[in-house]
Length: 326
Image (cartoon, helix red, strand yellow):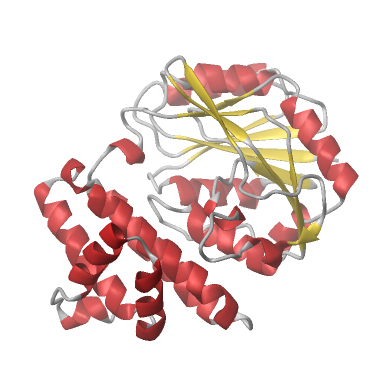
């Protein structure tokens, strides 16, 4: 019987994978499995994973013949997972020794659909603790109640899939899979679906996941067209939320978050290649036109002057009819 499955996609991370793999080895247990999904790496990553499959107990090595992106790689791992509980880790991050055993114990104790945890972000030697934006700790609550309020950061804004643990019943119910093919912001539709469709969750103060920032080939550092998938991601958030029985409650939060993310990308537009920057403005303007217009007006009225002005100007930008209807 497999108690716990850890799904770890890898793509061209030979510089960081050894640390990730050492941390898995330090967490190995006879009832744990580690699903290492190589998303068609072209560097030395495949050889590292082949060696890990021989040396680390519980490793299952899976290789994609074509690169599909993080969301697709995670789905491959989910399809192969056998554990009662599941979690994720990225191939350039790591976990503290014994952390997974503590995570499983916490899940056993609470008995809810999923748990969320804090994490440590590190860039070089600098480390900062990032907390789940939810005040109550170790209290099981209805997961839908953590979506709001709209004007404040909540659990759906803390979208890191690896900062938590999830019961297999969510996988069996179709809640845990990601929107296939997304190359960035893949966690956003996923976390919203999780909070809308799961019944119960809790936040626990375990601290053992270390998230590496500033990786040169990370999509957060690269201003190419893949970054624009955040539009597809948030379009899905809005579409799915609009179908919810409590859409009137949750749509203001979804629209406000979408607007905030658009404003963030516009604020860093200089990092994009010129053609991608132009495409960003067009897609973002079209996205604003697809939103419920009365609700969008209310959201823009509630935002700070700088972002509100920027988004209102973009809202007036002409876009091709096909883009606005996408």
